Image 1 (cartoon, rainbow, N blue to C red):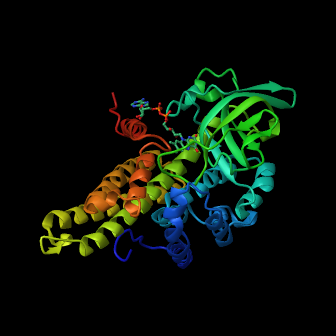
Image 2 (tube, helix red, strand yellow):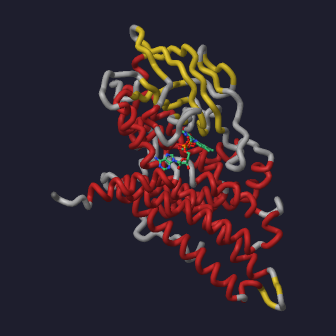
Image 3 (cartoon, rainbow, N blue to C red):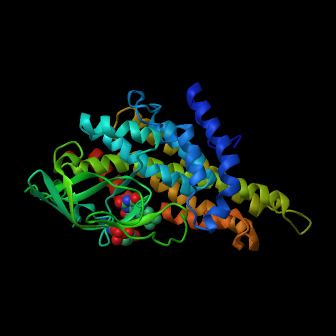
Length: 398
Ligand SMILES: Cc1cc2nc3c(=O)[nH]c(=O)nc-3n(C[C@H](O)[C@H](O)[C@H](O)COP(=O)(O)OP(=O)(O)OC[C@H]3O[C@@H](n4cnc5c(N)ncnc54)[C@H](O)[C@@H]3O)c2cc1C
């Protein structure tokens, strides 16, 4: 995109990475996305290509074999990839969140053992908070781990694991009952190492098949069932039980920037498709782009793309500067995902009847956009986080 979604003050390295990814997206993702998505096929060749580019280790520090890049670089890469096909960004996102959590909260042993293999993509991460009975209300988690000597025995069901089957490391939030008064202080993150695949992959740990979804196809989304699953106490993230909620919230804060970036990528693509189509399709003797109603829609779409991109960049920069960005990440996620739903719908309408045909890319974007209103916390949950932060900041001194 020549004009829209530009980011000021990028380093030479950042520009080089983004140019490389953009070329990869144009050559290796966009031409294959429709076919793979319609077949719900895992994009193995694309994932292998991303491994070669070092994307799995993009934010992992150089001392652990990664590229040591910032959240901003990561978010801009995600924006580029989602412009090609959102499912591919889904393959790397949970991996990135888990790597971030291990970097921030892992013991030295966990970092040494996991990060170098995560940087190459040999170990691939998924993260699991949601359960069949809850998503927004994380503190109500029911899956339970009971201490038994040097290990824990885990029972319960988790839901909606992106990369549940293809990952080999799941950061799972479960109840450990630390005797704390507040429910969220009785939650612990376990680093569950497992083989990739479906079925009972370890004694007491089952990944049933893929959930059949409306969009976001190709990438596997699964349940995970613990039934007397035994795991060592050394698998507790950071070594100390009871800290899982805070660790996960830290992880979803970067995750929310990433969802905002995905929404930006899809919106950019929807705009690209619409602006091209509007200049080709003629009605009443002229290209539809020359009807003011359509031209104004393009103007609105581009403005939304630009606003969402700037908020996403702002939220990423704050986190990179070491600041808490809960409010800003929430705002960026809220605005970018809501705008994405609007921009894809506008692009769909500009395509007229052809937008409804599976031959046109816009029908896929229309099915992808709604997920962004839900994943990493719904719009209502973002508003809760934003308003809570604002009331704290602007609270009256009585
Ligand atoms: C394709 C896909 C992939 C996913 N991947 C993952 C993953 O990798 N890991 C993971 O842990 N989870 C994942 N999720 C789960 C996702 O995070 C949850 O679906 C999401 O947080 C919403 O939870 P829920 O579905 O239980 O909805 P609920 O929490 O039941 O909410 C239902 C509705 O009520 C509203 N609501 C809830 N509470 C309030 C409130 N206090 N005030 C106002 N409105 C409220 C919600 O906004 C929503 O509209 C995934 C989901 C999908 C669809």
